[in-house]
Each structure stands twice: as C-alpha cells, then as structure tokens.
Image 1 (cartoon, chains in turn orange, red):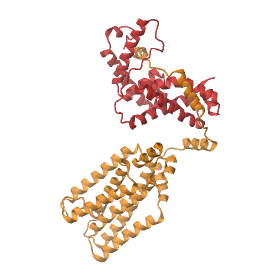
Image 2: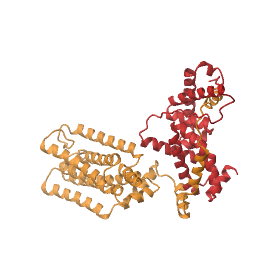
Image 3: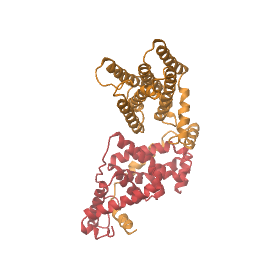
Image 4: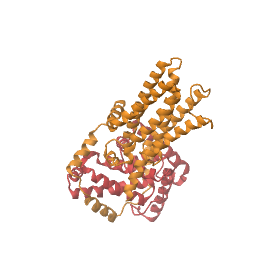
Length: 274
Length: 190
C-alpha cells in the first residue's frame, strides 16, 4: 500500500503534452461530419455483437467446418471420387504398386483441393468474407479441414479395398504411405497461403509441384526423397520427418493466422492504397 | 450532463453530446497513447482514428457505461495494429514533457518536476510493453483492475499478477537509478 502511494506520487511527475484546444475542436468537427450508420447496419452490428464466438470451442469449430461443406461444388466431390476410383481401378487391373500410386495421387489431389478451397481469397468472394463475423482465415481453415477429411476418407477407402485384395501388405504401412504426403502437402499449401501473398492457385500448384518433385527425385534416383515405399529401409525415418515437417508448417501457419491470410492482407492493402 | 447520459444522447444522434464526449476524452486518450508509444504525432493520429471508429459504431453500443473501456480498447487495438505493421519490436518513449500542464508554483519547482518526470519516463521505458501498459492504465488512467482486464482482454488474475510484477520492477528501477535527493523527497516509500 505504501509502495502503491509512493508509485502514484512518483508517476505523476511524468506529464505529457495534451492536445491543443484547436486540435480537439478539429476532431470534434470531423466526427460530427461523419456519416451516420443506417438502421440496418446498426441492427446488423448489434446482432453481430450478440452472436457467440465460434473460436476455441470444439462444437463451434465443428459447426464452422460443417458450414463450409456447402462451399464446394458437386463437381469437386465427384472429380475427387472419380480420380481415386480411377487410380484404384488402375491398381487392380494392372497390378501396379498400391503404395506408389496412392502416394502419388492422393497428395496431388489434396493440393488441388486446397487451391480450390482457398480460391475465395483471390476471387470476388473475398469482399463477402471480409464482411463476415468470422474471419476469412477461420473460414479457410474450416475448408482445409473439409478437403483433408474428404481426401483421407477416399484414401482410407481405397487402402481398405487394396488391402482386402492383398493381405500380406500391412494396412498401417499402406495408409501411412499416402497419409504423410497428404498432410505434408496440405500443411505446405496452407503455409504458403498464410505467409506469402500468392494466389490460391499458385499456392496449390507450388505444393503439388513440391510433391511431384519428391516423386521425380525418387524415381530418377537423384537423392533422398520423402516419397519412399514401405520397402525402403529409410521409410520409417522419412515418415517421422514428413509428419514433423507437416506439424511444423501447421504450427507456423496457425501462429501466423492471427494476422490473417497473406493474400487477403495484400488485397486489403491494394484496395486501401487506391 | 453525466458521461452515460452524454453517450446515450450521442448514440441517439445528438451532435452536441458527441462533441462533448470528444472534448472529454481526447486529452486523456492522447496522453494514454503518448505514454504507450512515446510519439505525440502518432498518438494524435491514433486518437483521431479511434474516435472516428468509435463514432461510426456508436449506435450499436448497447451499454453506455462501457463507453470508456470500449474507447481505450479500440485505441489499444489500433496501437497494436500499428506496432505490428511497422515491425515495431521495441518501443522507445521519447520525452514529451511540455511545461504547459500545471508547471508548479515557481521555476525551481518546475525544474525539479521536469527532472522527476524524466526519471519516471526512463524507468517506464525499461519495463516490458505488457508491464508498462498495466502501469499506465492503473496509475495514469486510474482504471480499476476489472476495467484494465476488459481493455487488455486479459483474465483478472493475470492483470493482478502482471500489475504486481510491474510495480515491483518499476519501484526497483526507480530506487536504483534515481538520485537520492529525489528519492528522499516526495518519492519516499518506494
């Protein structure tokens, strides 16, 4: 208490320059001439204030994610399904390596899905997103979850079908062979969108290109690649490295996400600079 | 008119009440921003932006008694946005004493007070931004712990512990670096 009083006395010694009366009157004139919001906007803002926040609670996040399902056109679901089904048919008919084909196909599909999911940030829909009570970055994260969950579902179904036909193959090894690359590609695409002001298509293409490069490095024997089948002695280590890198990209993206998507920030700056 | 009544009237479109509100809070809010950032011009710009935003959304304010907290919270958010945008990692508080405000009874007293102010400014400058902020809100803006929690968006317990540590750090700094002649005077008890 004594220290508190002494601090109060001491701190009062530092005085700062108050605005001049002229500056205050200028501000008064400025705010009095601001446009008054209409009744609709007032009502909207009151409703927005009363709306419970979705951030943090698992139920809120689930609701947000489910709400994003409607964002995807029917052809997205169908194209993904047809691509995986085509790959599966190819494996069954030609006897190709299931791990190789799924590990090539599913991550690329995810990267393209992420590009599709993030397209609003670079299109005319971003103004609508900016006006939403939920931030664009949360909407985008919700969409990313939808894409990843759908691709995991497709990949898992395909793995089960393949495994059913060739039981000697470990199901866990088969699933990991495409799951790690999928998570890596999705997290890399997210990271690019959050950190760099790239268009969604460019971020998706870069992420897909990254994975295709891994496949090529492996196929051409150019060096160590994350793309390795369960038969490779380095495979367990590569899985751990792949999952760690995916985790790193996800954490870095979520850390940056508070400042919004880079592409959205770039667009806002562009509009404000006009 | 009382503050709450002013807020209500301004919310309902009374231009005079809005002007009174601005006159009432412009000085304290600018002083808060100067102490937070150390730049008078920046503080004036941020205060103007704060009032513009608050006035634009005033009609949607449901609790007029929360106006002050809302105003300071908006100003703080704008300040933090600005700091992020400029990658402003370390805040440097520049001297801002002007001598216009209550200069004291005579030139000697004014000179002593200027020096005292300088020691305080330097001591505050060495605190972390988080500690400096709670000290400013508590001692200069005379806010309750609950109001500080609302302005900063921190839990009440965090505000209490942060303020406690900030007080200790500030008192220690003042004791160590302030000349004995000042400490033995009105600052006794630090």
